[in-house]
Image 1 (cartoon, rainbow, N blue to C red):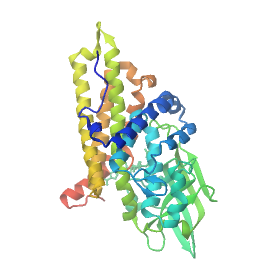
Image 2: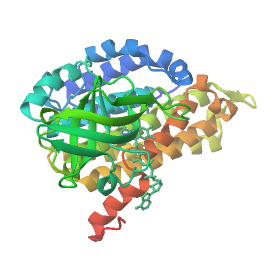
Image 3: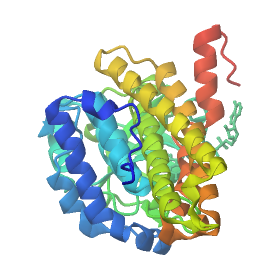
Length: 391
Ligand code: FAD
């Protein structure tokens, strides 16, 4: 009898509280039943499976760490496990979910007024209201902290927003878009909640991506958009506040990377056990086993790291550099794991139907978003040396 396919080699899942373990298995069962059969099809079409949103909502996992507004108020470890389990089957759905639950809801939860939280969070928690997070611009990615060119000018109780945002996940169908813009009066970055029908707001779907093709990324143009002061995030006063959201979500992206690696590893391992060459399963060859063990070593190191990362978060001790280190390490190692998975599958490794090719492509996007390797390394470098190497 063959051993079970299991990417949790150090059995970290069994250390979870029984209720957390039960939710992990519930999310896994949902992903395997509802998403696995359709993922390649939608990825190929670069389309979003809107029909899954109500079923995803039933899991009650959106805004899982937040307190109030219908949110479950569970641990950051639980949040990480959820991100991992979703990405283990499909990294695009994990990204859709991360934008909704982390970037968009997180901005409102961490930086919104009570009235703003009351207005938006309950609907977003139930996935009835979809959110997006617009920070990156066509000409400003890594340098967003000092370089945003989208402007916000105040006249009385109304702000006028002008500029462009690129890469914005969920933007093509979002009901509310968190837009970061530079206040022309004090030059600080402020956050605004734009309703989808705001005059002057245009969203064009970005086409021809080679990764995360299910995610609908938008190129947003803001042309004299009028936004009420009541829709300005009341506790977002500078980019330091934006960074509070990114710290939290970067930890989640590290978990997404682990999920992506785990999905590829488990699918590749299963393949090597049933694929025969020279009259034997390829899993019996020493060189194939070496590839598998390299993948598993990386995967196990990543998983151990993110559990500790979230334990720090649960203890209120997470710093930017902790999240950045995890994001750098996991997104690099995930690239190695998916490449190994593709390698042990030979030619079938580049066919979508064998369920590794999608992970290989998607790992490239995880590697670059929410801060590239270089930018997250500079955040860690600044913390350990005391010298900021940012330009
Ligand atoms: P650039 O900033 O142009 O960087 C290019 C290269 O230069 C990188 O290797 C970078 O590391 C390097 N570099 C830049 N500065 C330095 C430096 N000082 N030192 C050394 N190297 C440096 N953004 C949003 O706001 N909302 C979203 O929902 C969103 N979703 C995304 C989804 C996907 C699939 C992708 C790919 C991106 C998404 N982004 C989103 C944007 C993402 O956060 C940016 O791509 C990322 O921050 C990098 O910016 P950039 O692509 O403009 O690269």
